[in-house]
Image (cartoon, rainbow, N blue to C red; front, side, top):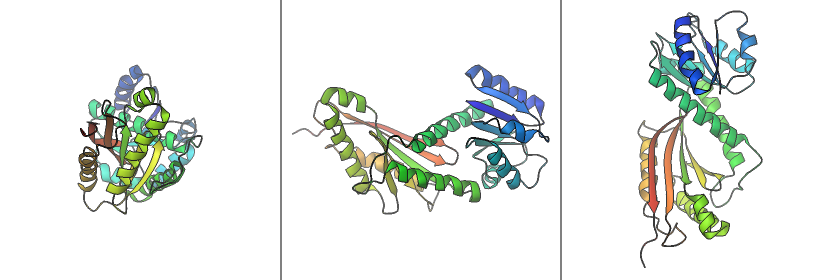
Length: 274
């Protein structure tokens, strides 16, 4: 991963670099100056930027995103500003100064997770058709990009619940692709039944589905949705293909545009005894 640090506070920048380089990241430090756009144009996955003493941030952030050849994950560094100001200015996330290194590493993990999902959704080599209330991966990608754009423009938060069959390769090896596809189809059937009308669900991998939650009424609503799906799926004993092997389901919640993951459930579902 390529990480650019833009900060006139060289002591803080060097501290960040000293923690990131041993992890195998490519890290470069520059100061805010007239050559900033040229350095940004090299293409970076993550850009960590302290905007002080700027008071109007939006034009600068738009310029950074235009100059970078990739859709970079932007982290604001600041002693005086807060997360909401970072979000409405077009950043993905916020890191307060003095920097807590554990918090910084968490932000990098979030960036890695979000970038991987962006690349997967944008990969048009494999798609899954719309069927039975489940939209195609390509269509879901357009909605995902719209959510990221609204976060960039308006500071709007969205959430995705990911539901996957973790032992899908084992099911394929044990029962074959046909039975494994049936297990995945049964999971999709239950997800469509359990979702709200406003929730948008897509198949993004053979063994994984994504549920987009838009404009929650309360902070707790996405968390409750993830809990609700996990609790309901535990009772779906028709998902496994036989009584000997469980379907191991993982449910986790991601927040956009930060990529932060919170609630996570892992469960082994078995067929009910005859």
